[in-house]
Length: 109
Length: 109
DNA sequence: CCGAATCCGCAGCGATACTG
DNA sequence: CAGTATCGCTGCGGATTCGG
Image (cartoon, rainbow over all chains, first blue to last red; front, side):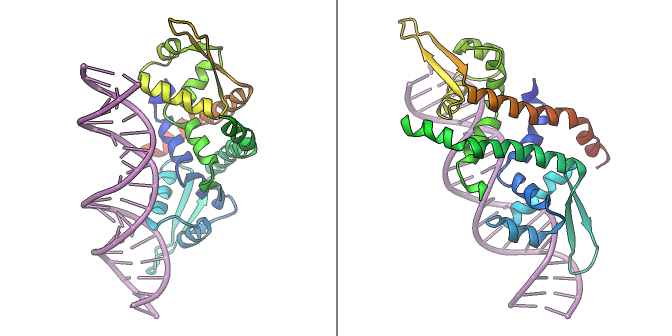
């Protein structure tokens, strides 16, 4: 069944705490580490590095290292990453649009 | 930002370990507790109950208690639940279709 | 249904290697 | 010291499982 296979790990990295935030920022264009951290806000250096590595391993993010001595690395979305980003955004957008209806249920509970 | 608001909790319940499995089974029609457990496989009673409560609170699942002495309860998808199910399946389906490409990256790493 | 044991995501603190 | 990217160790809390 789908739950036991690797597709779940991929989904986890996408829907995890920071995955989609990173995808959203990167969908506007390539960024470097510090830039991402600044635009996302609230993410620790460690978590950002970890998240990026996960997405890179899945082929969603392309990491370009300029091999300079003050480290300069750029992160960009791959075509696969763009596809993922749009789909995740679709789901997330629907949830946000539907949130009022969901919250409504909360109220009468 | 979207990450801090309740939409994340909803997304978590949907993409969590069991959420989408439940949605998938229920999209074929109403089921009762034992039926769900049998068709999903590998889920504990506790987790199934917990998952159903979460989805019910979000208005995705409708719980109908027949108030009979041998307890008889049925679970069904609400219209909202159907919408959610299709969207989650879309994302999950895409991941499964794309998994070969993702796994390809794994191989050359 | 309850309680204990366990797993896992997430964050914090600090460290590394190098330059100006 | 300041800045850049990454990594390791540690612990908390919630999620999940297990056993009655």
